[in-house]
Length: 478
Image 1: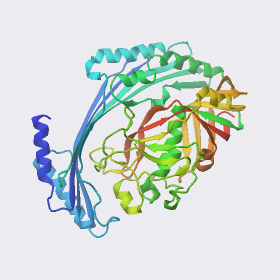
Image 2 (image 1 turned 180 degrees about the vertical axis):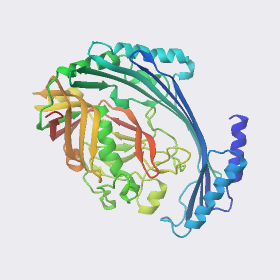
Image 3 (image 1 turned 45 degrees about the vertical axis):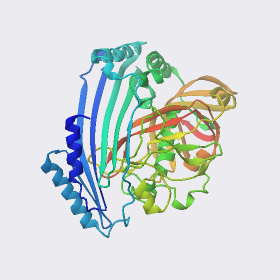
Image 4 (image 1 turned 135 degrees about the vertical axis):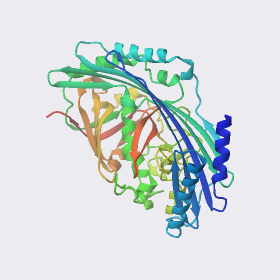
């Protein structure tokens, strides 16, 4: 720690009211870097720096928050006073009678094999210039781009009971897109639509074959121009890992957030079809479905040692052999509901309180190869990369679209189709899971929104290819 950081920590600790049942200061520094190249032109690099402190005070069953980016003594004192005033105003009115929060001591830092700091900015941009150029495979490519978004987030949580948790998270989201056009026909292919992100340094770029992807993306965008529309009918569906990101996120992740189950999201993004009495007995999917909440996976987007309330992170089954085990609820929601949860109280920044959020939510690998899953399909389609999504306000009925489909007939891929879509109902869909491959792939998304006021947060998902039976598939063209 620098001398300035040590002095700030000492000042924050001194600000915490010792007579509170619980009090904390959560200092957050987030630095962002955005590099991009579009159609051969290097766009202006963008850098951001966001820093502030959130104070939380519990007293007599009341809870108060106060946040500030003014790190002077006066600014910090004013934020503590606001938090204390709100705690007093809500005393006796909280959904939790007393604080269940811990005074944790620990630290965590993203493992980095090859730091971006070891490479000049010019060389980083050169990676994107080469990728952008490589996608220009045909005169029908009318738009293309390569980008890299990085976040370096440092958090320090201090409590009035001696707790201290320091964490540093480094996330990377590389991206590619190529758009081809003829007349009124326009088709776009991407590098997972930002799904192939992770924690670490330059090694994240190589993990999913970033250097080799541009030519394939350009060629597939052009090939989609001449591809037939996806057929309509009930058939088998094989989802690639980068589409499973969306499927997991919307039809497992959000429905299992405990605060949503308790009704907190009713006025913003809908509730959940899941009810508290389902845990331990409900058949969420087939016996092949195993889903873990696991912030301990090295290199996945939302790995950490502790959540933003200081709860230690652990690998936990949410669904095991198809049976619903537990919700994603942090310490406070667990106390409200009387249910076991996980370490998932997360805040998007210093000016938001932690709420129940997904972190790394993963479908565990199976034992089949992808080729074996394909060989078991008589008539179906393999879909890759999400492009559109719609789900009802109880996170139950859904309709998703993908960038590219590959028709499967009699156990063999026969060609590509464009504008593939499918629809279903969550429980029926997951109960029709008939195959899980062994190609476990760590991915994520940079833009999960939830809460009022809104919090946009980065989430990790890992999955292999998964096969489903009796799915309603349809093409996106009339």
